[in-house]
Amino acid sequence: MENQIKDSVFQKKAERVLSTLAEEFQTTALLVNLEGTIISQKGPRYGQKYFCDRLMEARQCKEIEQSEYRTVVMEAWRWGEAYISRCDFGVIRISVPVLRDNKIIGGIILRPILLREPANLPEGILKKFFKPRTPFFNRLKKDYRAIPIWDEAKIYRAAHHLFELAESISTPDFKILRHIQNIQKQQAKIAEEIHLYKSVGKIENMRLLNLISYDIEKELIHRVRLRDRTGAKEILNKLLGIVLLKDPIRVDLLKAHILELVVIFTRAAVEEGGNLEDILGMKYNFIVELSDIQRQEEICYWIVRVLDRIIDNIYATRNANNYEILEKALHYIEKNSSLSLTLENVANHVALSPSHFSHLIKKELGFTFVDYLTRVRIQKAKSLLRQSNLNITQIAFEVGYPDQSYFTKVFKRVEKATPKLYRKSFVENLEEKIDYNNRFKY
View (tube, rainbow, N blue to C red):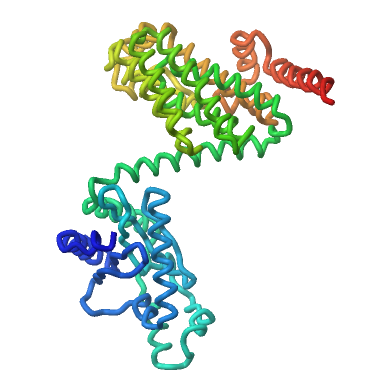
């Protein structure tokens, strides 16, 4: 690893990147190895020392800084993206990993940066390393006040640019980091779902979670059949949140749930006209692939990719152009269903005339725009009736019906029950299941 980062050809590329960063952002750019040791450094003005450089003149400070450099680079690798951190002095550093042959060999760090105008240098920490009221101590205070101050937008812009430049000198590229990044984003969404169920007090009994997951599973199948990729992924993360909430430890149980989803997805694909031979082959490959995955977060991300492949297979049997338009339209409806949405709004969004779009959705999906919008709104209403304490009027407003009486009328037409009765029946059904189960506990 050390030889790779000190390779002369690589170092020349890295130094060009450091010079670009230092010049563009008027601060210091460092190339460090996995031990946190500085291999190369570029500042906006040759020979000028910054606060962090002067700090490292003290042996103890240098050891701490090297340890922190090692930590921030490994955190950037762990999260698969630029890592923004702050040291004890309030100085911000932006770090990204550098890869050779898909293995981390070090990182690039951009520093020092302050987010706001410093009131005073944190002298208490400095006194642990340096004698106060000395020329060197006073110089440190002056250097601290000279640190560039950026707003959040500039910090994130620098982080994005740093990531791109680090990718340009890494081999083969940052595909593996983007994979890690996607996993972390999905885990954050699943964590949000888990937090939601906990916050509304729906974790007290597993029977309730089973009832909710059954309803979500039906909606997931519906989205797969619609080829609604975005909506299906959102619902899949909700379902994964419930699965992990019920048992966050056992990977074998998670795999069992995931295998059930594979069966559901492949069955839906066949029913929607997917090639039976291809899908059976895919199903076998999915089972083999799943057996080799052991980490929880990798399993969760893997089933999302399975979903993509299933929907791709369905697309392959239909007019792909039409379904790209429909996918965009359905996502727009889902996102804006609580607004006063019209056929014309959605048609404009996908650049079609209202009549053409109306014909397309009816031909390809088998129902009208109003039917689909109603379904989306009622599904959201059912979720709120089960999972929140909002009253009926509030729920009506939340899902796009400013008139509660009209909402109740539509809900009853779709679900054959009023919202109030639906909520009451759901609770009673749960209580019956709990009572039945409790009778047979020893």
